[in-house]
Image (tube, rainbow, N blue to C red; front, side, top):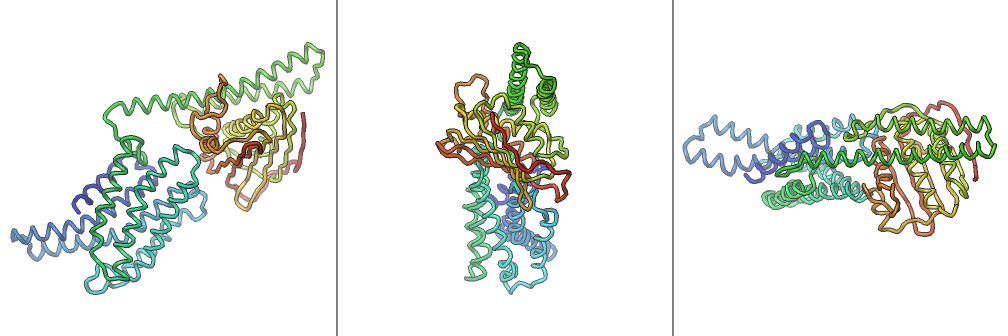
Length: 468
């Protein structure tokens, strides 16, 4: 049990020192510390007390102190492990910030734990097993269910690998602990099987340490040298690639509308109203380039959001207008059933929707139908962009959110950052992004964002249709 104590507390300390401000890190460290407390209890009972007795140091005060320390560390493990595990699984879930009672949830879940102190344990038992098992069992099972669901639903293969490592490290050990610490003592009177937890805990530590060397685990990265250099290079590559991707799109718009103005002028078709509209598109594209550069500070730092109230229908129409020169042979169907507002970063979200629309247009080189729909559910704003293009194979669909992966091979200016960037920005807005596609049946992109409230700024046209 000394191995359990040292191993878990060392892992917990390393994790909390790595990123103390992140709630997921704090909670997974708490799991390590509460689990290690069980090891401390066993070390006191199996090693310290016999050692003190052998040397004649086990005086009455010393026996009292050791007894209280053993009991306290044991209770921390029994009561703290299910609670910290469930809390970690909750805050680890991407939708946790959207759950309305998130701020009160930790206190509410603490009530059954605190209630355990009101019950007396049977003679010889460390805890009141009957009561504790009633709340500890659903806590652990709920935590396992949350971790498994998050892992199975993750579409980004990089994030999926990290979630699989976390699930592999936590789920087997906690499931085994559920039986050895609670179910077996409660229903079968088997109290000593907790000693076999050592084997599962050794597996957990092996997963954490092994993955930390190669991939990183919850922000913990162990390397001999060059870690900082490697991180810097990856940050520079990612930041500049995102900027290149954004600038490529906007420069393309400026070129298209510039050529349109040039040809209209040469043909004597210049119309003041249409010219003004085309120039506005060029100005918006240039402003968007400036906004993107400003958002990605120094091209190497994390993308930051500057949120404001926007009307999603208006922003979507602006994105469609800027792509109008590329819509030859494309019939565009628009349905704006949600007339309310959205709290978002206008520049970043406009870039996301432009990327998604551009992908849809590029999937229909011979023409087709582009459908854009903005609707609402009770709590979400739903954006759907659907094309009638070639669709994607399953192996392509599994990797569309991976950084630097692209299905558009052979294009010089394609960086493979589009959907990976979109996915990250949608998640930063506390939203979700999913893609449904089948070969020959087109592709549908669904994005959901939390509604800011039930109030509406003003209404917009409910339906629209254009063709070109």
